[in-house]
Image 1 (cartoon, rainbow, N blue to C red):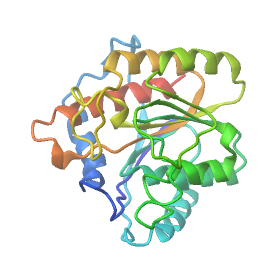
Image 2: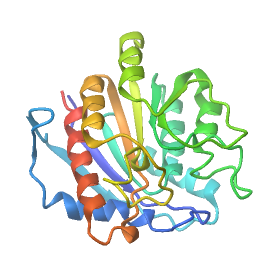
Image 3: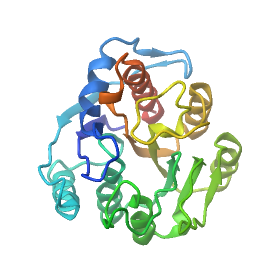
Image 4: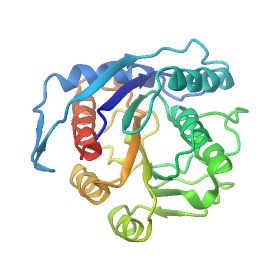
Length: 258
């Protein structure tokens, strides 16, 4: 098994309601230094991984340039599965999927999120955190993107494959049916804001940490790469969310290990 690579993509678009997600990769690393490196949820220790650091993009007002620059970075760094990308806002997922798809990888996307992210445009921008999944569906097909746990809908959003509120029940069906690898994109606002308040667009309800860990156990051995997005450290005065994000990062490393 290849060593897992970790890279930070601290990009954040200008349209964000409460800015701060660009600080998340650094905050996750800071909190990671304070947690145990063994998981009681997966009964395993964190595997060796190669942290490539954060890559900054000075193009927040030009998301198309960020997409090109991020794609060129992934190619230059020769990023191949398994890897974890730390965002940043949710747009970081688009250049990753574009890069993987162009490189010949065959996969489907599991999208855990409080929102569908399928607007055609958000405040006039077709490349934003609110339209990222719409753009991904255009790349790889609607049938290859599955959203679970959403709790908010914009009228124009009409997903082909999505289930509101639930994660575990539909995921059990998905892992039983799908025969190709999966890419996991995890927006932290899928979690209940009572346990993870530091997101820019919190939604009532949401899953708890144990349900997320059950999801990880179902996905073990099926995920080739993933990203963690939308932590907002500027809303995290007590560091509660950053520490929880670091624990999700630890569990993600174990999820990708063999």
